[in-house]
Image 1: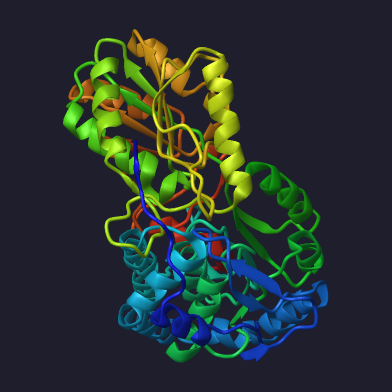
Image 2: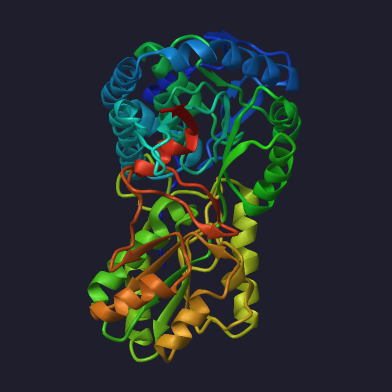
Length: 494
């Protein structure tokens, strides 16, 4: 049975930090109170409201776009080195304030404090990476093949951008979108998730301190995302939409973006296979599984969703995994020793219960966990299921929680077929010591990313994104800044 502790009241340190977090809309370089009823932000470990903040209306959203459009030309004309130095300054300020950001994420999202610290490091790397890429935007110059003229290919900012971030990585998803946009010379309107808006507001304050000019970054949290987004997306001044979230919402946003032919980046749902072959190093496979499944309490689009283990090693793999999972400690993320925090809300808890009930009804067995403990907050025991049968909901739906579901396979061909048996294609994980087989998996499993003998793939220097229903475009890496640049070709006759 997973160890459980009880969640404490807010400490003086926590209360003082929350008091310093801006509670307004950030539009045109000014903090505004807003006119709509406030958003109540909860601590998912307790269910208690920890802060109330301004709630943007559609009119507020349009004013934010007004500010972004007004600042667009000046920011685009700002020297790349100046943009780079501002992003570098933001990275330095984030290092100075890392403990505050980590604690804030734990309070509003629930992840253990150590993991929140890891997100500060990861999120900060997008600031540092794109500060370096800002001065490397380049083009081409040369004679055309016919010798009749000179071709000039240049890059320029796409224009004002609307960035919609999810609740599960409040800092990293903001930096992963804002940093390349600013590096490219674009201005932005950011809509953070209603469940975890505080980190983005705190980050906007940091950007202001780093020297980002008024209107370049605008933040409009809201409790009515559709109403806020529709007029922004319909406005002809907007030229780019970037969204991280569910596939159904992404489809709807793409349809709206199509009316004005916007540039779009969509990082949508996942259903990641985690394939363990008979020759795998099981120590590495188990370690990779713990990372790929239980990082961020399983609430990640990159989380391993379907564990496909060769029948010859499935029992041993499951035994080792269950042993590790039983040692996890469930509790409030600020408490010493806690390794699994709460889920984001009561709907997430109910979803875990329904997925497990369906799998068990179809023949799966619960090795450990399997239920929600009786306590305040939105907790669910980390769970291991074995003998999960094809057709189970848990193999088709994105789990987004600490439930590890194991099925078996017999042949390599079966493993590949089952790994690809999904509409999603964000990331896959493969464990094998056969290099030739590893290459076949890279070529054969249809995902935008893959971890070969590792359970963690995300890196600011690498392109993040998927195929099929998992989205389009890439964030991070050399590719990331080009999502915010348009290419212009000019011919100069000889």
